[in-house]
Amino acid sequence: MGIYPLYQPLDRNDGPTAVIEGKSVIMAGSNNYLCLTIHPEVRKASADAAMEFGTSFTGSRLLNGTHRLHGLLEGQLADFFDKEDSLVFSTGYQVNLGVISALVDENSILFMDKGDHASIYDAARLARGKVVRFDHNDEKALEEAFKQADPALGGQPGLGKIVIVDGVFSMEGNLCRLPEILSVCKKYKARLIVDDAHGVGTVGPGGRGTSHYFGLEKEVDLIIGTFSKTLASIGGFVAGDAKIIHYIKHFGRSIIYSASLPAPNVAAVICALKIMRREPERVERVIANGRTMREGLKSIGLNIGISETPIVPIIIGDELLTLTLWRELLNMGVYVNVAIHPAVPRGKSLLRTSYTSEHTREHLDRVLDIFSSLKKKHNL
Image (tube, rainbow, N blue to C red; front, side):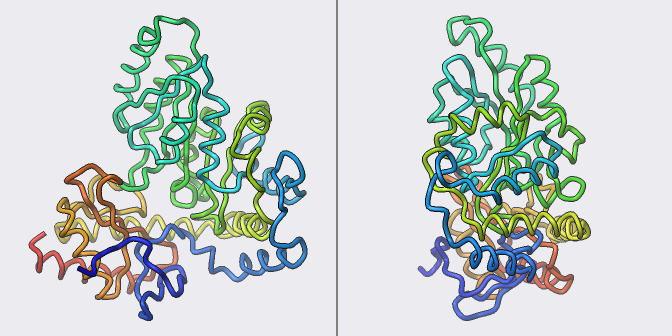
C-alpha cells in the first residue's frame, strides 16, 4: 500500500529539515534536539580526532580500549551533571544493560516503570534479582509494589531495592513524577536511577535534564543518558558516586566485553558539551518550540496526550489511519515517526512528532497548517 514507515532511508538530515526520496521536508521526527550534529565546531572536532587518533580503539575499555579522551569526557560529564564520576559506554542501550546487570543481584529487587525504555526491559532480563513492574508514573503503585515485594520473595528481610525510571518518556513526551517517586524511594530505603536519554537538552537548567529540572540531582543516585540525541554522537554514560561507578566498571558486562567508543565520537560529545555550556539559549529555544507546538496542535483539536516537552504525540488510535497519515504528511513535506503496537498499547497508535531549537516559526506554522488540513480531511 506504500505506507510502510520503518527503516525509511534519508538522503540528508540537516536538523530542522531533511531530504527524503529526493525531496526536502521539514524534519518533525528527530531527536537532534539542539541540532548540534550540524554545528561546524562539532563536525570539525570529530574530523580532527579521526585524523589524529584514528577511527577505532579496537579493544574493550577494560583492557586496551581506554584512551585519555574517555577520561576527559567522563570528568566533564560528572561536572556537568553534578556527580562525583561517570562512565562512558559505546551505546546508550549498553548503559542500561551494563548498569542493571551489574547492580541487580540475587540480594536485590529492581522496580521499573511499565513505560520505561525497551533497553531497560532487556536489561531486566539479564538481572539476577527479582524484577517488579509498577504502573506508569504512579508513585502509589510503586509504594504498593514495595509493600508486596518482600513477602512475594518469602519474606526475606534486608533486600536491596533499586528503582529505575525514564526522566522523559519517549513516546508520550511527559516528565517522570520524580519528586513523588523519590519520596517513596526514601521511605522504603531504595536507590533511584533516572534514564534521561530524552531529558538532556530538553529540560532543566542548561539542558541538564529531569533531575536538575526538579532540583533533585544530588538525591538521584545515578543519572543515565545517551549521546545519540542532544549530544550529537553515539554512545552513552552513567553518572553517580565514584564507588558505584568503580563497581560498574568491573561488573558491567556490556562495557567489559564491547569495543570502546571511538575518538571521533568522543570528541563530538566533548565539543557538544562545550557548546551547551556556552549557548544555553539553544535549550530555551527548543523548550519554546515545544510549547508552541503543544499549544498549536491542541488548538486545532488534536489529541496530544500529556506531553510536557518538545516530544509531542498526536494520538490517532487506528493503526491503518495512523500509517496513512504518516504517508500523507511525508507527501506534503513533513516527516514524523509512527508508533504502533507493540511500541504502544493496541488502540493507542500515534504519530510521534519532535522539535528542535533550530525550527523556525515558519517551519512550525507550516506543520500546523498541514495537520489542520489533515484533521478536516479525515475528521480526526
